[in-house]
Amino acid sequence: MVKSDWFGSNGIKKVIYIIVICGSIGVCFLGLQTKAKQEQQRKVEYATATIKNEAVKIKRLNKQILELYQNDQEEFLIEPIEVEKLNNIERDSITLRTEAADFGLENKDFSIDTSEVTEGKQLLLTKIDDIKNKRDIQKQVTALLVQAPSDWAAEPVDVVINEQASVEGVAQIRNEISETDSAWSKAIIALLNEMTTQAKAYTDLKQAINAMAEGETLTAEATLENIILVFNQLDQIKNEMLKKELSDRLDVIDKLLEKQLFGNEEINNQEEILPSE
Image 1 (cartoon, rainbow, N blue to C red):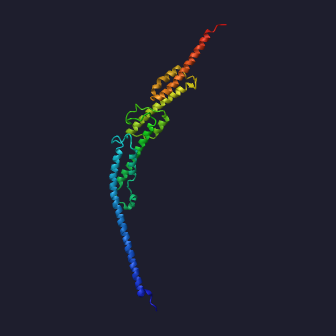
Image 2: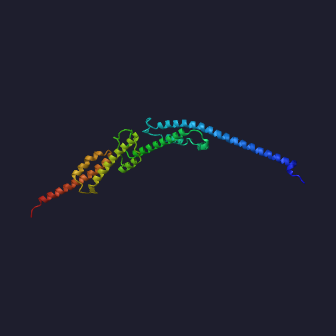
Image 3: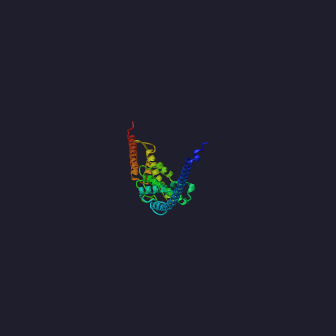
């Protein structure tokens, strides 16, 4: 009977080779496993250090946001705002790392408490959105004024609407404002109320004047009483250009009415001096 090669010298060598190979594979596997654990540990340590740095960065970014306001109440923005600075703050806030995935880790491996930096990041982004919203609304308001307010917190007694302003346009801006008890919200609404008053006064007077004439033909509304009534209200129009527009049109109607009255008077006089037959 022939013995199997496994029991000969060649077989023993094969067994030894297999044992060596298996041992090598085991050593490699253990090495890889150890390396993976070390890599995981390094990630956790790096994440821990980074989270601490992010907390410091959040405080710095909050300070930079405060610098965009007139005071620490964070209500009224400084003028003008550096757009590049605001963009940099927003970029740095967005890139803050507060989640396990930001470090290539899973939540189960992420034992660090990140609630503070997570809330801090969200608060930063909320503040940035608030600044951008205020800036956008103030730009829209300014676009309807002859001159931007020198102090957005002051009473809107000196604001003057421009030729592009309308009741509808002001209402659109108002719809974008969340009515809150904040000083900024109250100040902007007060400003919009004044703008609405001016725009409505102009629209009402223009309609009243237009109702007096169709082209060069006077209507029944073209009476001396109505002309005087409208004339006395022209001072409500703070925009000098708009006031002149209404005044010039009213002057034309007044002259047409005067001409009409003079013509009627002349006809009546002629009728009175006609010889009797």
